[in-house]
Length: 259
Length: 69
Image (cartoon, each protein chain N blue to C red):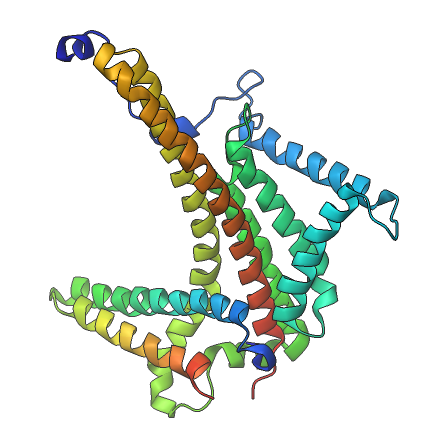
């Protein structure tokens, strides 16, 4: 076994390099797989929801029912319950966000696509930046610039000297930590999940090429990989949900009047 | 925070993540200031003091924003 491993350079564990996919067309760096996946997701989402809502019936078809379930979930559970009476203004954004992230996450376990777009950190960065702009804009529009800044920087009911300690924390929370944790949580979950699947499936494949003893354990690696694929599906849904939930929370916070 | 439905479980879930955000930024900001002081003065204890102050202040802030009612 050691001899064999030495001959074919051993197992190359998957790593960060597996996420740097080469351009598809020549050496144009804007034609990588994640970019096409993002466009594909937009097409799929549009086709699905246009088809689901085209012939709206009293007795809905299965397709219409599926589309309305997703919409109703975002509208009621993420919009209405979190944001409150002004929620309808934000449902289009929340809905777009949720379906876009969900579809792109699930690409990670769709056969042949098998790459979660959000495991390239630029995608979550941009989404978090949009959320960041939206909730600050909403807050400024709702309360006026000065009142909004005052509310962020000075939580009420504190002795004045304490603000020296608290205000820097508040500023960094709103301007830095919130968008950063929002994007990194999504990115890290998708990155780690994809890596985990790569380890088990590439590792299983490598075991299959080993001696007979190794061939016998390979099925366990594949079985574990399949189990993890189902686990990944849960994580992918959860992360899309958390991202949208936090966006709704931030909007609700920007709209809430201080008591 | 939308006070009207703060007690809703889904809202608590979100509040949980906001709390994590506060704790992280408390440690980062005051730990960072402590680290800067250490570099400037050639000492080594301001980083720890800053992190303690930041963690304490962040917990206080969480209480202000979420715990008081």
